[in-house]
Image (tube, rainbow, N blue to C red; front, side, top):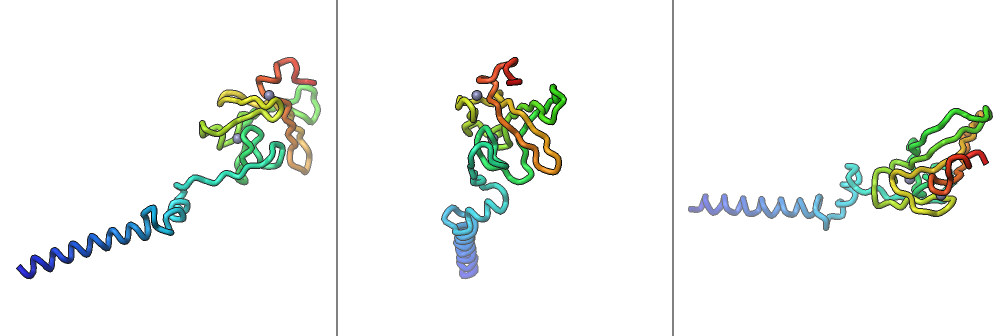
Length: 148
Ligand SMILES: [Zn+2]
Ligand SMILES: [Zn+2]
């Protein structure tokens, strides 16, 4: 009978320890809780925003992209034979991946859905970063008015 009680006490204290361990290290009350999850990459990344036109800022959603992240875009060969090329910008990793991010045209200000894109001119510059000039979106810019 004494052994039985001892085992029971062990199991009981074991359960308490497990619960404590959960609360301290994993549970939502734990001070390690947010850190643990962001370390594992599960935490939601805090999104830094900026102004359209700044380097590394997505022109559709204004979210600052990580170094190395690029906007999804499609560049055409130059029509005029000059250093500038026509480019369609579909958006960045953030605003193409998540539906609840507001995408707007920096020129006309209209809200864009996932299939809309921006029309821009890319100037290739030797020795420097390419310069992208956004002309408008597929709503405010119609074909035929591109080369203005
Ligand atoms: Zn974006
Ligand atoms: Zn527009």
